[in-house]
Image (cartoon, rainbow, N blue to C red; front, side):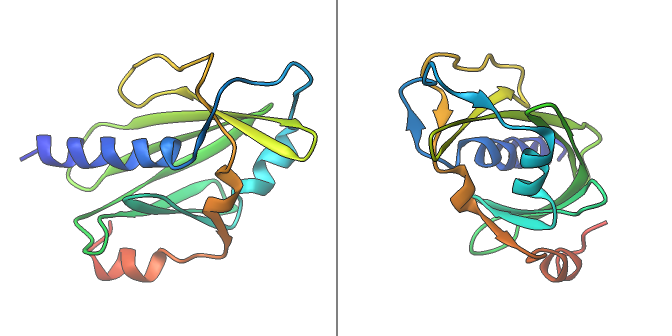
Length: 155
């Protein structure tokens, strides 16, 4: 039974990092976003990913639902920013393992680049072609998760 939540959380975290289109590479003129800029991307917002939604509360906690259109599990955890990198540590309901994913951000002109730097499954990041360029489109202000989370038996 535990393998099921592990699989689900892996898919949740993959959708966290892979919900965007991939660019070829990071431009040479790209500069790191500040910690405050990265916090502003996430804090108080809901990320709408392929198979999950995650709320990033301003207090550094996360709450998520997995499954679209039908919710199949919930998860919760924490998020924090250091420099231009955000890391989220989440645990699915019924799964004792904590999964970590991290992303770094840069700007080149008006375009923001995002690299999935730490993968929940331990796989290596793609430092050549793994830069997402439409990550900002995945976020909306406010908590669009808590009601569904509670209704689905979130812990």
